[in-house]
Amino acid sequence: MPTAPPPAPAHPWRALAVALLNLSGLGLGYAVVRRWVLMALCWVATGILLIVALPADPDGVPGTAVVLYLVFLALAAAHGASVGLRSRLALLPSALIAAVLGVVLLAVPATGVVLYDGARDEATEQMLLDRLDRADELVERSGKSDFASGEAGYRRALAAYGALREDHPDSRAARRVPDRLKTYYTTVGAPFAREDYCAAVQPLKYLRTVPNSMDKKALGSLTRWPDDRLATSLYECAAASLSGGEAGWTAQFGELLSAFPDSAQAGKVEPAVKGAVDKAVKSVGGDDPCAAVQHLDGLATQVRGLPGEEAGLADSLGKDADRASRSARSGAYACGVDQYKDGSFSEAVTTMNDFVKENPHHKNRARAQKIAIAAEVAQTVPAAGKRLPTTASGGSIAVTVKNDSPDEITVMYTGPVTGSFNLKACGSCTSYSLSSTLGLGFKPCSDSGKHYPQRTIRLPVGTTYFVHKSRSATGKSPASDTAKLSPGYVYTECAYTTSSFGY
Image (cartoon, rainbow, N blue to C red; front, side, top):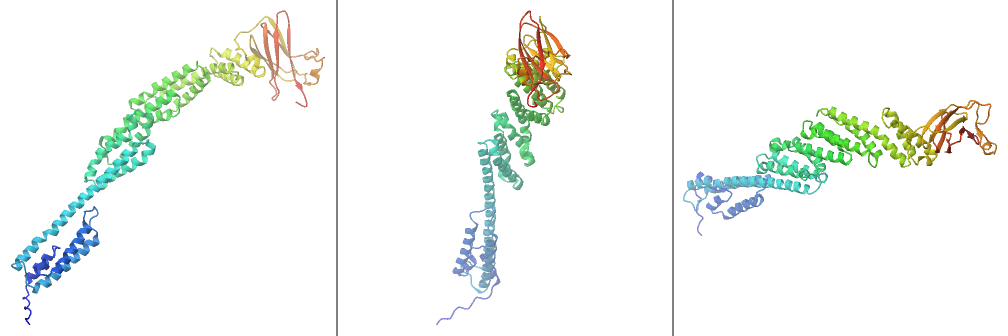
């Protein structure tokens, strides 16, 4: 049998060449020494790495896979060097050429690493652009609903834009954020563009907070974008509420005067308030003067609460408030007349008495006193309130009113003329029992031995309604009398007190 050829003498260059060729990851060192199975194993290992690594991912190749592959290459190089030390080379003419080729082929994995890093960077860019697109979609969806419903989406989108600028400032996505923010602002502030000023207030106030969490360089001129729009929205919304008699305008005008005291919109606040006061003053002469008076009272209080100092409007707003207050006090007369005509006599008494107290020099004060008296009479005798009293006084018929009661009394009367006076208590008089007043012989104010406090007044012909009311005791019901006065007669009214079962 033939004997095997003797092994080749040891040659370090062959060992180096096989090791270098195996470091390419393609198993070419095993190819030049005809170890095909081992070369195939290298291809399998490299293929597995490519499967794991591709397509490129922003997170890169898992560290475990890289470490295992590098260990495999080191083992392949070491084993190849051992095999190549005493094996003859095939395919290549010399060990030196094989070593040079091995060095050249090291560029293959190096180039692969560079290309992979580029692919991973592009994958990262695409991932960031996807985040940008998702943020854009959030803004678009949020813009299809009202601000309260869309605010959470706006905030998430803003956080995404901010993260792109802060965490990946050199990325293509981060460079696109400033343009996206312009769309963001116009979407959030869309109610202003639609002239829906009340709905625009909250989103514009929100936009003023954006610079607190976003790179001001990315915002640029958007930093001041909401200011004038918010000032306009606050004014327009408040002015509409004020004109329509709705609530909320004081808070909006107050915010406008505090936040933008030097703005043109702040300068329009006082004229708007003045116009509202003018309108309310005119409405006192309308169908519902009491509501107008109440509105004026409210206006006076609300206007005094406006912070006009910084805007230099304190004096003019104070004058508007004073005018509203004066008009409310003066308008109480029209309110009292309206209450009287509606039969709300108790309210008319209160309104007119307050008017008399608060307007000592008003031209209608004297008649207001008459109306208050007539309204009080009408509370006991409703027929007395069928006509509004005048300021007329006096007449041709004498009527004497005597007090046969132990109480000081007020005598009120209304009819062709209206008035009232007080009579002192009768010191020697007592209350009559109810049963005694039912007898045929009952004649109060007829005891010649008593001195009855009395007063004589002169009244015109016609029906006069009297009410006698105790001034010195509570819980006693007033008494009333209806007198039809005719010429040629002398009339006497007698006031007395009755009691029954201890009352």
